[in-house]
Every structure is written in structure tokens, then in C-alpha cells.
Length: 293
Image (tube, rainbow, N blue to C red):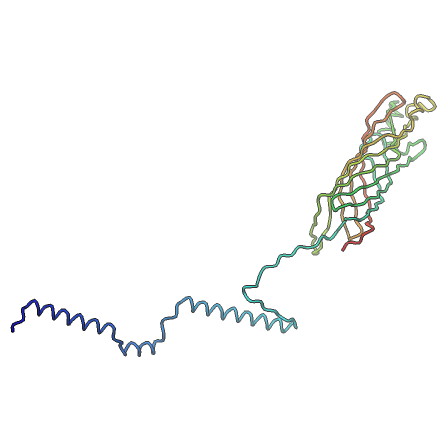
């Protein structure tokens, strides 16, 4: 029987396809030999890098452990998942909460144009919180020289003796006020020797009384009834100011302050005058009572 040419062509195509498929799935022994010689190429580059990093970290840990052993310190190694940055807050060094404050001080009235007035005083305070406190403050200012002339400034002697001018002179002799103290700011300043200066800023506001004595020698009014009637007076007064407290330890501090004492005075029973005495003060504060932790 004669096979048509188309049938021959189809049979040859099927045979060639079958041979090609079989060769694709067949295992070549030569490839296995090359794999054994060259090694397995299935490992990725990332795996090799991870192994190298692990080796470096292990070497670093071994160095740290050796150094700790030399110093006699036991080294605790935490797993990587538990290693964290720990933030610490330093405790407040200087505390005022529920503590009393006793302060003797010396001061000077700076804005009196005719007199030099030196103040010797003390304050007694109690701090309800770190920010708020109450204070009782008082002072006494002595008179110096014969007839008070030791208090005169140069300009006062000049205008009274040479120019025959009689200014109205009223001496602040004593005062007492009850004040509210407000301390909102607390800070530290680092020094060169790795130390720190601890300080806080505060303000005060209060009310009380002021005692004054008029100088009648300047106006030649000694013995005059209208002048003697108001020679010494007690005035209602307002006090306000602020300052800086510098702590040296937990019980001692220095205080630098500026305070104003305002009141209305009557001179020689006739004239009213608003007085404002601005004083600068330096005091040594001692804290008593509750011991800070």
C-alpha cells in the first residue's frame, strides 16, 4: 500500500516532537558532576550577607565580654529584641514643698533723692507648694548722725545749707507686710567643673503698714503744732517685687531681691504725697521643717 506524502510528513513531525520532549525531562549525569565540583548555587546573596553580619556581631560581643571579665564586671547580654534606649530624668535637687524659710537680710532704699536709708530685716515664710508660698516680711531703718544729718546725701546738705531750700523729708523707719510668693521658674546653670548652680525666680505681692518720721529740722518746723501732729505716721502700704534664689545645698540659699513699698503720706498736716521706696536686698535663706527626700 502506498502512504500518501501528507501522512509521511505528519508522522515525521510527531516523532521529532516525542524525541525532543523526552530529552528535556531526562537528567544529564554531566550536570550532576558539575554541581558537585562547583558547589550548590541555590544560596542567595542575602543569606551570605546575614551570615557575615552575624559573625561580626558575635565577635563584637566576645570582645565586650572579655573586657567586662578583665574589669571583674558581670556582663548581661540581652537579646536584640529587648535592647532599648532608656531615658532618665534627674530628680529635682532643691525642694521647697511644705518647708519653712527663714531669712535675715540687709537692704538699701535706692530712689530717695535726699536720704540714704539702710534696712535691716527678716522674713518668715512657708511654701505650700513648689510654686506658691506665704511670707511675713519686716524691716527697721535706723537714723544716723546728730538730728539725722548722717543720712543726708551730698545734694541735701548743699541745698539746705548753701541754697536755703527746705525739701520735704520723710524717713521710712520700719515696715511689715504679709505677702504671697510665686515661684514659677526653676533652673540649673552648668559650671566648668561639671557642677551646677541651682536657682529659681520668684515674685512677691502683699500689703501691710509702713512707719515714717518727718524731718522737721530742715523746714524749721520743730514745735509747730500742725507739723508735730503728722511728724510720725503709720500708713497702709502695698508691697511688690521679685528676686532670685540661688541654692547651695538643700537647706541654704542666697536671695537677691528688689521690692517696692508704696503708701500715701501727709506732711505737716497739709499736703498729701505718694511715696514709693524701692529697696534692693540681699538675704541668707535657711529652710527648716520637712526634710527633702
